[in-house]
Image (cartoon, rainbow, N blue to C red; front, side):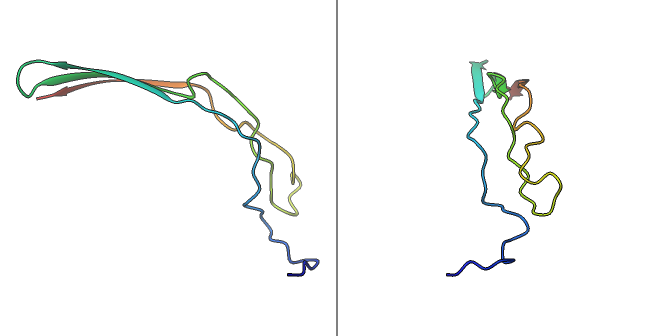
Length: 87
């Protein structure tokens, strides 16, 4: 295979940025109230340790921001609580 000038794609979709770890945690507890009745309490935390890193660089050729990192990879910590009653 010979590389020729002008045959590169406009967007390099296979380029990746640095690895950024993200931990998602979920805890729940079920309480039984007789036959066929349950109460479930649940808590989910996404990006639990609130880690933030740089996003991938812009890979569009001809773009004025080509090769520059313009944002963060992941957002802030999100926590959700749930209560479910099954009968």
